[in-house]
Length: 78
Image 1 (cartoon, rainbow, N blue to C red):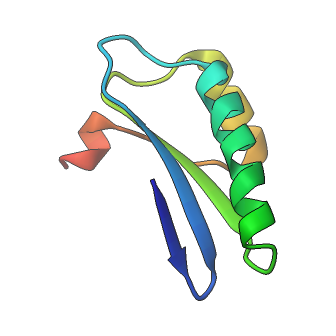
Image 2: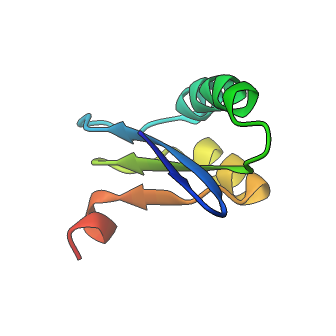
Image 3: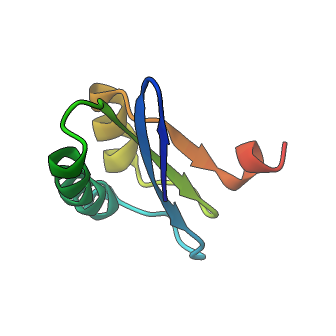
């Protein structure tokens, strides 16, 4: 999912699995963001990941380092 606004582009990945997701999803999203950056070079790209069943520790750690929001189901329906 992508949303483009005046201040940049939000590129998000949504996963509706029954297991927590890992770093591989972030790597895939980062690859997708390269394409968006080529199409919109003047816009900063912001990443976010949304998941039904949460995230593995390694993903929490990497996302924290890269300032990427992780949103699980409890936050979506709160």
